[in-house]
Image 1 (cartoon, rainbow over the protein chains, first blue to last red):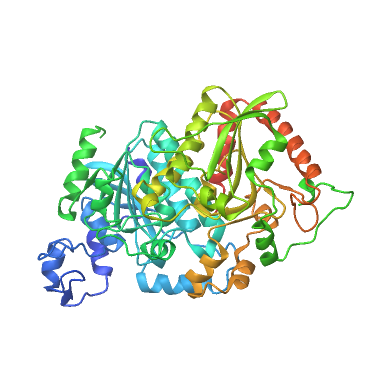
Image 2: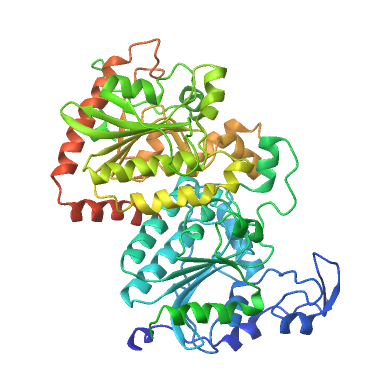
Length: 279
Length: 279
């Protein structure tokens, strides 16, 4: 079982922590404006202790909070985007996004254990070009699905995306078909796929793998939709109702199984994995 | 390019279209709609209504018919010729129930071993309150997921506008063909300009960059065939019969050869078609 780790470099969760940019001493909650001491915020998994607002999380931080210490093995760490459509200025934009976020692309994929339950995990990061899905995001997720089929492991995908990546045009759009077809194969093998929708999950990601989980979880307050609120407002020329397209709204309308607080997420994932058996 | 380009009126057209001009032709009100193709190519078409869950979406039509001596299922996105009809058809922008009706008819086709032909012509999936409440993203995602394993041949022909996920949900089969002046893109050029430059009037610049003509899609390996049209585009007011007859002959031939393939091979090839797009 362990031999497939051979080629991969080991990263422990604590290493990610060291690499991160030092945070401000105090952070202001976007929702209730409370000033929160960084250590308190970090201890509460970046959820506002006063109002429960879920701050956005960087991909490695999310992995650190989700998988057992030292168990994460990253796939395709160096895969970089090509300018498939020769879109002017795209490579510069990618470089900038890479410098700002410390990531090579908008998704991190790999193996990890959740309280001893091994799974394949993909985590999207909205800090990299709005978490948009281009060919690398599509490819990394497809390869992760193929790994989970090869080793018959459950799959967990944390979604966070503004949608398809404009600069890769039609090639981005086709990633929706590619990932969905891979998920269908995964499903036919009787394997479990859990998706966790985080703020924001929209566009092409919503219209593909974000809505295809056997079990769909969401973080409280996350914006989840096909079209973004600005586009809908422009189309229908009226104000949107309070709470429209929130995680709770989707649960009420039957598209999300359960809204789960970040502090309970790891436990919830573990319980679902346990009920579905496996290692 | 040449291998799939055929002679119409004895003249081989190899001129690349001006993208913006091409966009305008693709949207022309004189172009044949899905229903026009259905009437010309098939016999005994019976329209079947409803998604068996919520309602009947008039933007998407579908039913059963004969293609020469072969029973088939036909689905199309239907534009109107005047304002009244366009209001009824929602300008061919489907609600989730349009996609669910399409999938219901596809599953029915699978049960009775009928090949499926889709005519794609939509500015995009509809953006609005009801569409979001009833799961636009979920409806599109489910189509991508299920079509990838449908055990009958699926051919899609983009006849006018192939707008984003709304078009993708009906065009992920074994073969994706485009009428010569049809377009297929991640977003309308107006939307694209609005997202990238916050200026929806820069349509020409957007169209030039987007690679949305049939020639571009063919060169990217996404469109499998281009169906030649009369110079300046097919029109119900001009000679359209030869072009449609040619499409019909191609459909008959292609379905025969797809039906002759063992189903496992067919599905493998379908999977590979999308698996190979991107990195």
